[in-house]
Length: 142
Figure (cartoon, rainbow, N blue to C red):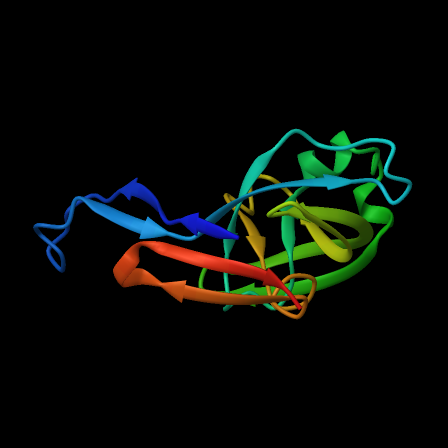
């Protein structure tokens, strides 16, 4: 399946004084509880090859019935934005018309401004081809 990059506003800066927008590979996504009885509304997640895991905002997990997010396996993660604590749960992830089991982390919404599709639970299950020159990316289940 082919997807278009999404255009986001960019505030000009001394480093990039004429840049007013940025393109990013966002993918419409939703999650289900493991019984496939409750699903979240559609939301967007960044396809992020630099993320080790799929990480979602805590409120999305609570929506599908993970009322006690902190009952999941705890893992401290660090990156450019500093460190966060994620609690991992088994869910069903739907992306690009495909559904699969995913062991994903949930992070307090104030600590995770965007949802991430990372290496484990996404990149290991799909062939992803980025074509920035055509402003699109392709997704194919492996």
